[in-house]
Image 1 (cartoon, one colour):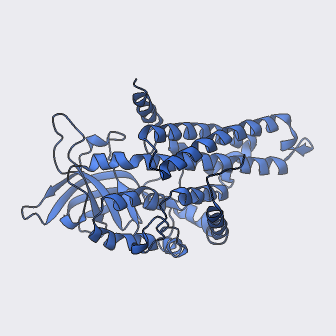
Image 2 (image 1 turned 90 degrees about the vertical axis):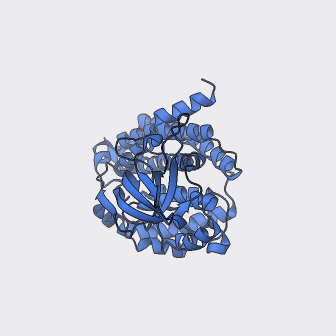
Image 3 (image 1 turned 45 degrees about the vertical axis):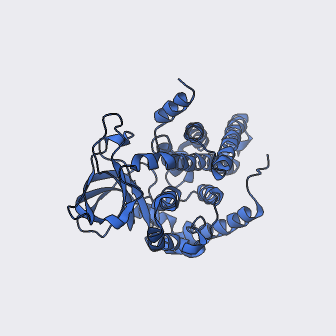
Length: 385
């Protein structure tokens, strides 16, 4: 079926991105995998290409396009090529909406131009050791100084995507104790300069997949954060997170769909080339049926993703809608990728083949951005259960 969500402009962007990936990323990707990180300077190339600035308003150096679809095209093309832009997955998809909605004019002038150019890379720090999905249980604190000029930040965060390369991190911290009726009250967002004294990047975590993503532990020891770097209002941080988590979950759904589609591409190419018992693996009925079943699932994922993308651009994507899209696409993609790996036989288990890396990369989709179990809870609550 022909997709109808993309225009000629989107497809022109797709061609540009595909050519850029082939010329600038594929030749060096094995080096990125070995080092476990995308070189910091490479993000300047992405900025020069205009990718980071698509959704940034024109007055701050961007293109001012109010749509997530270009980001979706980028995600699809990265998956198709079996590559990743590492920790920058948090830079625009996760962090930009917070600045657009909650930053004041002075802050936007300070941060958005560098965000668009790749000179100032952003990450967001929510999760803490021992809290997982229970964001209201965070213990990192930010106490206002007696003269009211700065906050003193103390605590630790973990699983922070882009944490090594980040220049600024949106840190969630407690500025007040929870209220008696609402344990989510009291969380505040601070945009922390990573060069601040007392700010430290701990381990770059050794992950099963997403090997080029610099996922890190962060610690804060009496870090002074100027009040000018408070994002939005004090004590309202949890509610801001709730407003923007649907976009994060949409991005994961899009990524899962794109990975599923890429897995079919890899499996089809491999089985057409691989000879067994004197004929291509693709000639066997089992292979045809497996790939056909996978194609049907990817078609269903595509329909879910396209509907969610349209809803998001119309400001109609609800938390339950996003949870449903994430749940379905991540669970379906896991099955598709597993079946496509099986069609590779023993070679599917070798990291030199993109299907193996895809298998490992995909697994976290059912964990981060809210686990599948949390997604089921959100959907059930929306159903009145």
